[in-house]
Image 1 (cartoon, rainbow, N blue to C red):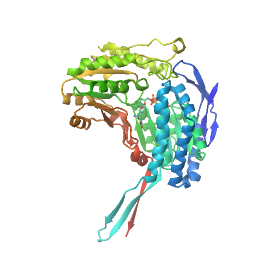
Image 2: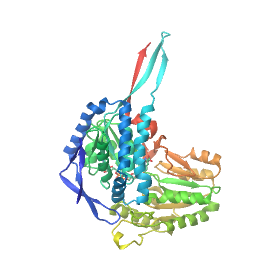
Image 3: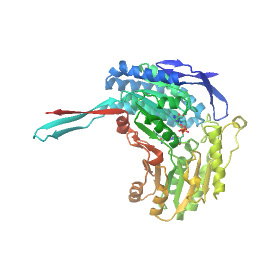
Length: 484
Ligand code: NAD
Ligand code: 6OD
């Protein structure tokens, strides 16, 4: 059986006990993962602290940038291994991992490698009371040791989305990948070695959240900042854990994202776009749409088209290049999603399609598959309309006016993403600007430019990452004021 070990100070390290990594497509155990106890987490943080004082701390920005490009090269050189590891851990289709997850990991390193070389800082010439002046300018410095905690849905993409800017700013990191998907963070350690990243700069500790590696890391007094992508309640738990040491946090959390479809949209484009937004990665993307509001005159036609899209998705083995929909991440998550499928009916929903477990081949019978599912007819107060389900499911409801659509879309404690579907450009701008979210797409979804602000409002997060926003989170600015 393959072992997945912790990575501390350039060495692979075994913990005191193991837990199983399971392939969601067939329920088989693919590896034994070595859980980091508190001592290993402490060693990782100490190694990261020591590395700040070593070569890494002396590197020029140009040198750091060049090493980060080499990390991207090393990921590309191991492309097939990263894809295979990500597919086995998550059950996502190989086509998706090859098109999205692994290329984005390399792009994350290249983007921040380039950005750090050109990033400016503020400067002001200041008039002083005596009629003379002073010069103020800010100096960018690393925060120190950054604790990075990531989820299972896009494991490598989301890990590198934080590791790349943290390293670009000169920090060292200890990462705690999700217990469900430990493989690619560990493989990244090999890419770091190939790229000449000094030992101790990138460390990996495996384990769970509470009373395990996640909590040991976030409460460690020598960690300078914590960044999390995960559930909103995990953000709340980590906030408590960092409170005693006042660590800065950046949280990218859950969502209950809405799409608004106006009668003047391109109906085929909207149906395709929303099908992707609901079902990509089996609905396990924080940005996925779970609430669709459709202007009444096109409601029936839109539901019909979305149903056809859902029913045409190929459910199957993640290793098959034609598969659109893989399994959910775990048996436990499938129970959760199926319980919402049941709850929707109890809350009065009409089932348009799906609602259960699909027929799959004998080899996949122990996998965690569910059907892509569409409901209509729920009241807005229903739990299925309010709570994040994180599966391939949406509720579609009609609306009559633009104001009503805006109010329905914004009636949530979350605020991550929204999409607007209209051919009226003025309306697109007007409605988009009223969405209470971190990102609004018009006639598209999950179209990313890594320089733009990314984050959420309310239960969807604290802070923004992306481009300069990431550089600002992962650095301390020291303002220097010189009397001239
Ligand atoms: P999760 O919150 O259960 O776990 C995320 C990570 O936090 C894991 O590594 C876990 O071990 C760790 N963790 C859990 N409790 C902890 C604690 N008390 N202390 C320290 N670490 C702890 O999330 P998940 O189930 O892995 O991922 C799905 C969730 O993530 C969904 O809610 C989804 O919307 C959200 N998400 C958000 C974004 C975003 O960018 N906003 C992106 C991806 C996923
Ligand atoms: O594209 C990104 O940078 C990003 N953070 C995506 C998050 C997806 C959530 O599952």
